[in-house]
Image 1: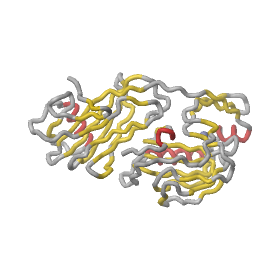
Image 2 (image 1 turned 90 degrees about the horizontal axis):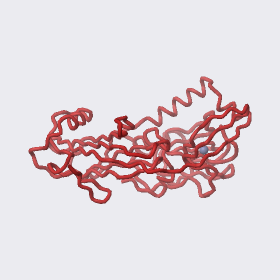
Image 3 (image 1 turned 90 degrees about the vertical axis):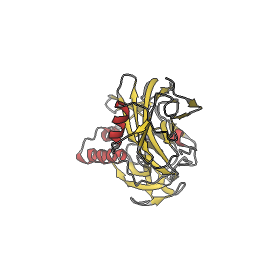
Image 4 (image 1 turned 180 degrees about the vertical axis):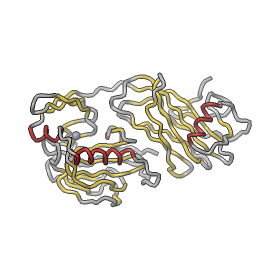
Length: 325
Ligand SMILES: [Zn+2]
């Protein structure tokens, strides 16, 4: 059976394709998903189809955007991404963006290999809590990344090798923050903006970096963001509306700002010289939040700018100028 496609949008047509629409007695999203997967029986009740939009291609470092609706009464939505051999890459809940729509965002790592993925999207909606589900192929296209050796002096080598309680705790806290998908998070769709006026870049997202320690040992470390080569004191602007969830000094990243824009979506700003925001502040897109610097593990003045989607570092260039929904 073929799933009808219209451009990049897949419309779920009940009774007409492998995807199904049927009443569901279970209330949890997990239950709905399981029911949808185990009991692919078509509905006997005719309802309007719930549009589910899934792109057909993606590149490593992009963000997969799956949209549900508009439709009356979407109760929840979930997207699972699997490899061809069944490995689950992501299992991500959608969130309400108003207007009868839900959106689920899945960060695709820069390390993802070209090939075929499977996107399994389902939502519960309607008076009878019907389940709409669609399973679609997603082609991961090839993408080239540059290789780069970064020699570290004694000070930076010491930071990299620092396994002090303080540094490990800082890493744990930041990872926990990036993993959070707060339902009450802001809803900023875009357009997303670059954080500095300068376009001078000293390192790109996804660069296959190798840190060369002062003792000659080598440690591969893909670059998780963009480095802007700007002098200390350069104004740094918020990439979008959001809430400051981190504004503090860290051993590795120096003076650091992290902004929550959506459930599970964060922009981050590292190695700053001065911060002008505090944790808990609401910020607007383009607001002057910090001055760049050279604090933490840094081989020269620059701003490291990074986006996280469900903990996965995603290309800032994918975000710039985009309106997500
Ligand atoms: Zn960087």
